[in-house]
Image 1: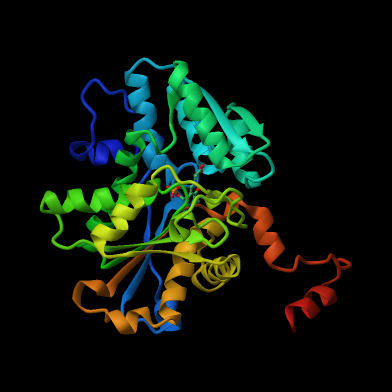
Image 2 (image 1 turned 180 degrees about the vertical axis):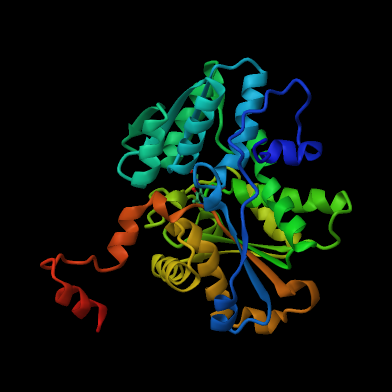
Length: 357
Ligand code: F0G
């Protein structure tokens, strides 16, 4: 028997029944990695854990939501799914559509999705439509079309996506034996912060945990509508996954922040790249730039003295940063950040010289 996906693992917490055909690629069950290097580096008196969502079947957290959204669409007899995407949603939707025997249509902003994600959607046979416009425009068009045609919208506006994604919070609590004190997370369209907060609250209601974390969301500085309290018409960031100027779950993200006593703040591209390099080069975990926004936020707050001011007492001594997507999604960014090797004549002495011997 293969490993269970999130629907089987958390069936009692999800809106599924015996009649729901479970469309799964055995998503979830991702590692919670202790990052002692970060604890020492930041001199934070707490345990820091990384929830490595790049381990999901298509390489991002979207799979948790997609198993639910596609299963429910299948249950309703729908034959096609559609999304707007900065890349990961399209990769996930197209893979799960294959699994379900459905068609997939994905609308992406031309020139602004990472190569790996585009490759995924294409090889899974999605109908990929690139528009001259950004994610926000793509989403508004997709909403219109899915309202009018028998095609299921599988963006996080689809409530089943949020239901599936809340299982990330369950896994963290199951692994830690409690909820963390602080939960750091990148924010783009704001579905994931909404989902995690829902998951923590439901686990508390079910008596599985006694505390709730503060939700610490981070947007990219050039695409930070929630922080700046205005729609950003032309969002810009190297973290293309979160290059979003008008998030669909804006209000829900604010509610997660306010109910939990957390923050939604922004990090610059430089801070994102710094965290990205630390994760790969010092922790050993390769993520895509957007994913590094959670750790960039942690670094920013630690430099600003947040932890000294707030005091990390009791349950606040466990910190989780969600790493939303795999580094291989965006190989071009990695290559740009480091110097590539130049070829030498194939001689032992040349190799030894480069090895420093
Ligand atoms: N990290 C990654 C790697 C993402 O792909 C996304 C969103 C986020 C963080 C932000 O999550 O939108 O729930 O706040 N990607 C979407 C997409 C927009 O189309 O793949 P969010």
